[in-house]
Structures are given as C-alpha cells and as structure tokens.
Length: 188
Length: 317
Image 1 (cartoon, rainbow over the protein chains, first blue to last red):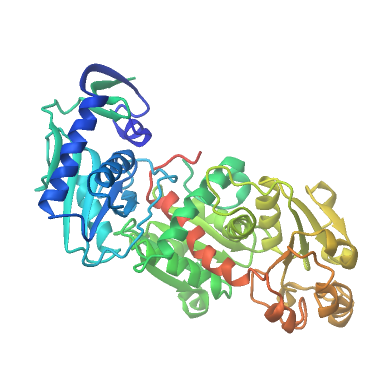
Image 2 (tube, rainbow over the protein chains, first blue to last red; image 1 turned 180 degrees about the vertical axis):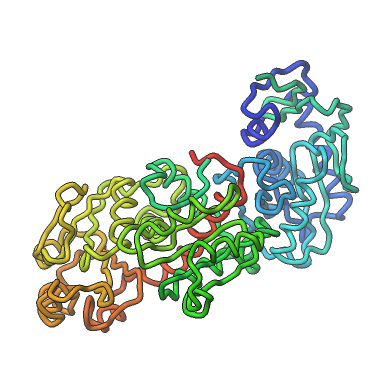
C-alpha cells in the first residue's frame, strides 16, 4: 500500500493485515490492458491525451498504463503526477507528505486528461484533483481511471474506466501494490 | 507538534530538514502559471511589524496570500501604539478579531516569545526578527538557497556538509548572523565569522564557529560569502572607528572579489548599503550573486512554515 494511505488510514500508524486477495498480478495486468484499450476506444486514439497520476498510489498504475498504451498504439503518452494535499477539504486532519511531487509535463489546455488512481473511495481526492488541474490549464475533458472502485462515494463522482468493482465495508482497507490487490484491515 | 517558530534551535536538525523538504514543494508551486493553492483558505495571518521592514513583511504577505490565507497588516507607525496602547492590548485586539497566526518583527529581543504567553491556544506566533536575537525564516531561506545552488532541491535530508561559509560584517548586532549560523552548522557546513573585534559578541568562544579578522586570507577558502548589512541604526558610538576604516578592512571591493574561488557564491539578506559592505559594481557584475534567489526562496520557505504551523496537522520529523 502506498505509504501515504497507510499513514492516513485510521488507526493512524497501524499495521495493514490482509484478509483476502482480490486480484493477483496477472489479473491486474489484464484489467489495465482492458482499460488501456477502452481509453483508446473512447477517445478514438491517443491524440491530445495526457495521463495524470494521483500521488502517491496512482503513480505506478499510470506508468503501467502508459507502457501498455505504447505497446498497443506505439504512442508515448505524456504522463504527469499531481499531489492534491494542498487542495483537500480535510487539510489539518491528515499529515502532509512533503516528498509527493507535482510534475505536469505539458499545458493541459485543450487536452483530454485521464486521471489515474489506485482506489476510488469517497471521491474527495478526485474532487481536490479537479480543483488542482484547473491551475494547470483548462482541459477539454477529464476522465478517471481506477484499478478498484470500492464504493462509499460522498460526492457525485464516477469513474470512466474501472479495473474491478469491489463491494467493501467502510472500515476495510484496499491495498494496491505491484504484486496485486489485497483486501484487509488496519490493526494497531 | 510545534505551534510557534521563535528560533531555529527548537527545531533541531530534523525539523530544519523537514521544512526545507517542504520548501521544495512550494518552490514548485511558485513556478506554476497560477502560483496559488487553497491550503489555508479561511485562515487569517496578522503581520505585526514594530520595526521597519520591506522584504520580510512583503514576503510573509505574498506567502500567506499564495496559500489563500487572509492577511492583516499592523504597522506600529500607524497604529494605536502612538496613542499609548501596549503591545499586549494590540495583540488582544487582533486575537479578538479571530486570527490564526501572528508574524512579529520587533526591535527588542524576546518580544515574540512574550507574545506566545499572551495568546490563547490555536494561535501561532512566528518570529520575523527580534532585536539581535533571531530571524529564523532568514536562516532557513539562506540555507535553502545555498543548498539549492550546490546540491539541487533539498529533498528529505538536506546537507551542506563540506561547504565553508564566511559571514562578514556586523555579527554583534545581527539576528540574521545568529540564525544563519544555526541553520548552516545544523546542516553540516563550517562557518567562519569575519568582523572587527568590536562587532563580535563577547561570548563568541562558545559559538560553533571560527573567527577571523583577515578577510583577504579567508576569501579563497570560501564556498559561500555571506555579506551582512552594517546596521547603522543599531551601532553604538565607537564600535567601529569609522565607516571608512570598516570599508578598508571588510568591504567586498573589486580587488577582493577576485580572491574568491571560481565556484563561490555571494549571498546578502538585503537591504544592501552599496559602498559600505560591498562595492556596488561587484553585486552587479559578479556572476554568482544569490540575492534575488534568496528573495524568491524566502516566499517558498515562509509558505512552508505557515503551512506547517497552520495547515498540515503534521508532526515535524
């Protein structure tokens, strides 16, 4: 699990204990391959597409998708990262991660931005990301790709591309790591 | 978690490194087309300046505004202090207006500390320079600027190990020197003070620095030459023979600047008194004067400090 999620999930500083495997490495690869095809299909190619990964969990997912898009279409899609800590509506409730960088490689005006994250939960991170994107230009459209949609939305936000819909209980924790996806809980 | 920033000693090495690492991020924010983030929306920062200041006050002003905080400016010369109001009453008035932080500059050492005893929980006090005592954000921004020049972005473990910093000028009256020494030595640099004996404090032997009276001899060994302003307003009669004598021995002239190595940088906290601590043309012509970079980084450092104290909920290291 991304270190940030670990530190920010109550009980803070607890230990993640896995209860079941949701997806293994091969299944994640297949899901992201499908998502990559869907991105190409929906946008009729990759012209003016920019991938923007949410720090920190989305970074490795976006790299993986960029690699797949290159294998499928032979196009190097510009890929950036965005840290939304300064745009959150719950600043002060969470520790800040000074090492999470924002790098947007191109002006986003008139581009189609595909936001990439590992887990979609309440939707608050995505809301903050939409605010943050505005400061880097006016995208023509913003789409959202996530590995896991675990429900419990608190805002009217829905993903365009989903690896797997996973019904969860609120107190459960989803861990997306390079080896696959685990469902578990945090223990002190 | 720290609530106030009064001097760098209370931060320790890890606290200083944590602020410099956070500064990396606000330097990046400053380079954006829209260099403003909503992190401190709804917070109010009061600038209380009892002593003249241009760049520090403006810098805190810009830093707070770029974090979307509201800013009140209280300057002593145009306030009710002239009608006889005490500092304590002024602070209480601001407090009653619902502020979250007070940025204080005062000519007497210890005033920010004193204010921390008056304000209630939930208000942070930031020292923007008190007497001869400390100017912590200046120390941080100088260390950040030097680090950035020689080593790039600060990262998680900023270090100035192996660098030799010389501070020239009025050390005795300089809070900048005191905070610079703390920041530089905490990050591993060696510091040499170069000043006439009358402008050095009496307890200098207890400071973690070397001392020299011979600028020409020290110059070739320096990586960083930190010039300090000769502070006429704090000078007591007789502390230097005459300004002319000072210039002869300690001013950075065209002749002296040639003694610096090919990689050495010059810093100056401003305001510069051209012709006293430095010949005007040296500042304009020397290729590695970091003065303006110090000003830009000063905004980022102050954003990091305001964000840490008011916004992040984070433990310092």
